[in-house]
Length: 107
Image 1 (cartoon, helix red, strand yellow):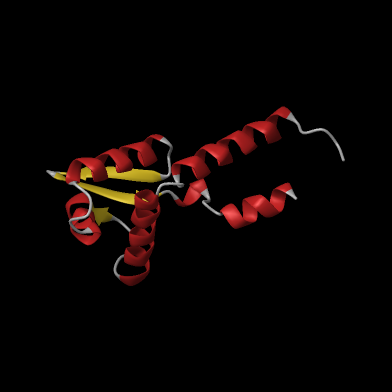
Image 2 (cartoon, helix red, strand yellow):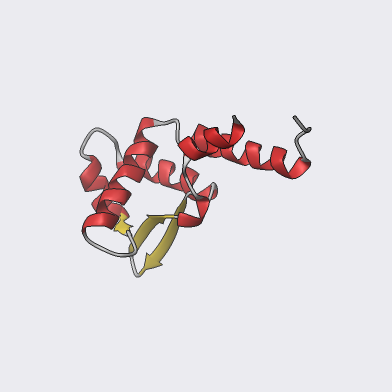
């Protein structure tokens, strides 16, 4: 087995950071809702944040949802777009959130 290059090590750290962020149940629920919305209603998979808050129900407050979205956006898992007073979010396909494939790469 050859030693890991600095580029490979950086990729491992990036993947670990994404997995850490996705380790929160609310964040996984947000991604799940975005995926369902994408496959059922619109090609871009965008959801208005106010609609997302409705879909999540009363179990989580609007400020908490906003904080989760902000954290995922800073990590480039989600994309945000403003249109007037509305903010739309979608997940970034280029992030390639595929942990099962990532783990296979490591073995």
